[in-house]
Image (cartoon, rainbow, N blue to C red):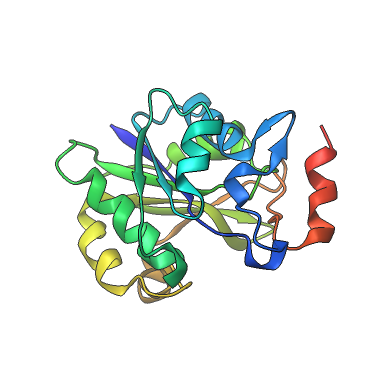
Length: 195
């Protein structure tokens, strides 16, 4: 069982405080698109980590069928959300977590499914690559979760673990099926209008 873990807690500080999960994409909140992508790629269950405006996200977005949790420490950065998400998967029987970010709508099911297919064992470590450069999503076998949780701080996420274990990382080229841009600043919002 490979679980999807969606990090959707950010407050959109560089977007003027507009939570990324609630940005409109194809007429619906962006978080719904990210959940759909994980499901269509075969991830089950899907855990969603909320933070900024969590109550509004719950009231606005259709997250039915997901395990939704709130990270009270979301302002500390992505690391705290990754820790919360991995903790929520403990004891579920998931053999790996496929981690994606809410603000990357250019990454669809094809890329996520490729990374998911790189799973070999609970020690698996894989990431999408774009022209050879590591990006998201990232797959972490369950055996790696304790070390990732211990080193995930600030906005580093799993970078410490990925750097320390670079020789064990399987890069899965996805540039032909996805665009890894982030929605970070107001100029990026125009990308949400593209279909």
